[in-house]
Each structure stands twice: as C-alpha cells, then as structure tokens.
Amino acid sequence: MQSSSTFTAPVAVERPAPAVARITLARPPMNALTLEMKRLIEAYLAVYAADETVRAVVIQGSAKAFAAGTDLAEMREMTALDHARLRTNDVFAAMRAFPKPLIAAVEGFALGGGCELALNCDMIIAGRGARFGQPEIKVGIMPGAGGTQLLLRTIGRYQAVRLALTGSHIDAEEALRMGMISELVESGDAAEAALRVARDIANMPPLAVKSILAAFRFGQNAPLDDALVHERRLFEELFDTDDQEEGMSAFLERRPAAFKGR
Image 1 (cartoon, rainbow, N blue to C red):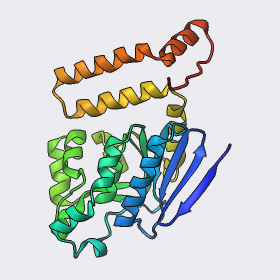
Image 2 (image 1 turned 135 degrees about the horizontal axis):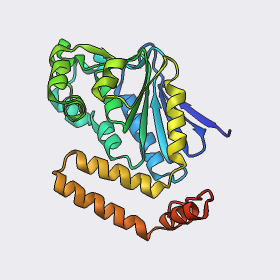
Image 3 (image 1 turned 180 degrees about the vertical axis):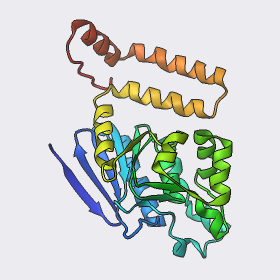
Image 4 (image 1 turned 30 degrees about the horizontal axis):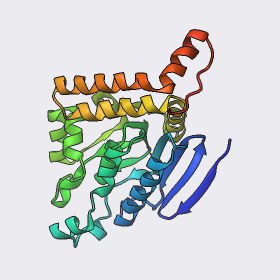
C-alpha cells in the first residue's frame, strides 16, 4: 500500500490508502481544539476538496480523546466581537460544505467542540469506550458549532435538549441506540473501521457519491417536496455521465466497473 505523510503539529495529515486522506488531531493530552487547529483542518479540507485523487476523508484523534472540547484557556478571554472577527466557526461551515464524505473515527472523549467536530461529519464510527456530550453549559456558555441544531436533527428534540441542558455524557452504545453514530466497534478499532469504510466509498463512482451527499445535505433542512424534487434532479443528471454508462454496462456484462468521475 502506498502511503505518504506530512506532519504539521498539532494536526497531522496523511494518505493511508489510494483515494483516501486522513486528518489526525495531535495535541495531547486531550486534543483540546485551538484556533490554530481549526484553521489547519479548514486549510486541509480546502486542499482535499480540490484534489480529484481524494475521494473520502477520515478525521480522527487519539486513543484517549477524539477531541475533549475547545481550549478554554484560549477561549476564556474572547468577546463576542472576537469570535466574529476571528471567524472561529469557519471550520465547521467548511465541513458542512465539503463535497466528499467525511468520516469521524472516535475513540475516547468527543465533548463540546469535539462532539460538534464529529457531528459535522457525514458518518461517525466509534470505539466502544467513546463518550459524547455537550458540556458547555457547565462553563456558562452553550454549543455554538452545531451542537444544538445537529443533535436536534440527529437524535430528536428531547434527547438533544437533555444533553445540552444537563451537560451529561453518553457512552457509545447509547449514542448508537439514539442514531447518533453510524457504527460501533471495539475500543481501538475505530480508525481501522473508518479507513475500511473510506476505502469502500473511494471505490464507488465519485459523481454519484457527490450527488448522494448533496441530496442528504439539502434534504436535512428542506421541506419534503422540495427535497424530493432536488433528489430527482440529481438522479436525472447522473444519466448524462460516463460513470452511469460504465456502471450499468459493467453490471450487465458481469465485469468490474472502472469509474472515472466523468
């Protein structure tokens, strides 16, 4: 397997498999998110969005913590104006606009901004020891990067309100029951499981992957009738692609398809 790496502390990036990129949070002991880390993640996503050789991206932390929140020492002195001026939320907007699948591999704590980092991905694969929560209320603030709205749309109002107003944590098994995570694996296996899923997706036709993501993201906030119209338009557009012709021909001819993203 070919793999190349570039390391820029406190965030590392690598290509662990063909067409797959991986972003690793590397700020021990708990991967508390700093503005520098957010800007690095945003910058790498911009690179991968433009790179046609990348078809899926995994975001992971360490065995102890995916990310145990935002660095409070950095945040404590910020004013409302500082947050607007420094654009502290831009990385999460970049994740929601990213045109390729983002897969979070979560071990240990994913709290506050770390939980929101995972929620802004398209899939979450968690080790059995993972713990999720939005404890911002305990330090006098609230979730501000999707914690209320994404949880509302993911696990429903009553569970989302419970987590946000009590600041309590849930384990990975409860998160799975709520529909908050995509897959539960044994502790220590989340990174490999996420890479496996990323490889599988990278072998799919990239235009169809992009269209499916676009349909889900549009439909999350749209009335059903509008979302169905949008889905149908994306469906029809794929019939003008080489990948559609190749995929159906390969199926009928009983041979592997060779998708080109055209």
